[in-house]
Length: 611
Image 1 (spheres, one colour):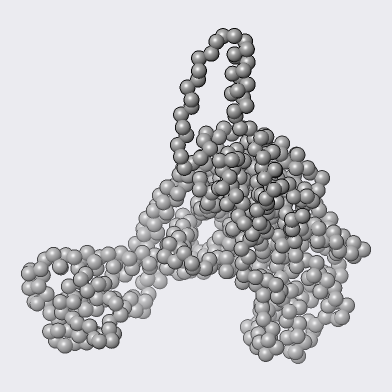
Image 2 (tube, rainbow, N blue to C red; image 1 turned 180 degrees about the vertical axis):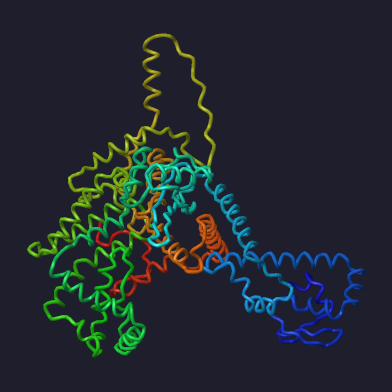
């Protein structure tokens, strides 16, 4: 609190080093760390009469001090609630006697709120979050959803989470968390649909504004989208993970079984983990030790095999681990497995990032298909990977949203070799049909549309009517005309691969009004629904906690909304702060191979190059 804001400074003065304050009346010294609460407590308990006299002489100063103290307590309450929301701590922790004494020592004037007050504050913050989000969504015209379901095996709960992605009028990509709710009854397509529409209505989002959703292949979610005539974009990371999951080769499975036994032992024994880490440190081996991944971790088996090979010297240097060593033939099989599957694991990691575009899905599959097709097809592992990759690749090429998205990305549009048997003329037909179904009101969002010119009075002759109709038809900009101009522009000047496709459309919005509208619609979706999966990881930690497993779904939703509110406050205070969620995502991936980077500026597949 500032010197001018508290009446305490009428009684105290600071030391030269600013670490202590001394009472002018009784010479008592107190430690000072920026707060006047301890000084005020001293004045009220020791110098009561003098305080009353001063209050009577200067009532304005006293009222100002009271308001400042009340504001300080409100800020502390806000921070406490956000700490409870993000720390997975029981609300009853505030009743802990030692915690209360700790708070009292820090600030004697602060009155610690109880569990019920925390719940009320959580609800109030949620109302604030929803209100602010509704204001943010005012610029939403069309959006894409990211959703998925989570079933607690032992918690007897089925939860569905919902994110919305859209591109505003300034061509800025937005992501908003709408909430997490439990399904009433069985998770059928009808019940899930009712839940999703209810969440959307809470934020005043009409179902007609939704283009589609990115999610896995769950039958209930697909059925909901089909019944509402919405596009379904299969999660790219999930599709890539299915390729690795379906890699069934007996020789590889036998080697991986030995790798899994080592990981299981390290996961069970704390002493073994400590010994293993010490040996790896002595050998200067960096990276994650071979521990088991969660069963839902996409590509986890590949990452485990990579860490096993990286720490192979540590395994051979410990006597108790000799049983987990491989023969030369087995090691060669594992090295070949890692060599062939590493590009897929890298692709999964890139797809999991939230700053990707749906337009990158087809180029990603094209690069993987080109990679595996260049390998020795006489090997069974290559044939299996090639067949699985080609199957998933063709599935993606049958997705209209994926095709229109890659068309709208000037980095990839009209690039040869991306579409297999599909032609760019086929994609143009989809684009033209979509664009002509919408009417573009204006060419610019920054300036109002000028009034139309007054139509000249014409004669009733057939010639006049014919010429007038031709003049009006040729003045209208059609999607076909824009497509021709767009292709010509890319031939002369294609944007660099590190650029953002939204920057291109922001610059050319007036030149291509229909195509820029399409770009805002189809480029808002990321490659995958990994953001929902990361949210479910938090849910699992909260719901599975022995001290939190009695939480209602409403309170869980309140906690998560407050966590996102806290995250937004952090970014407002420090725009340069790192994204903790993205850091958590990269923890298992970084360091697996020497070329791994924390975050590339562009998430475009490395193997894609321009002709």
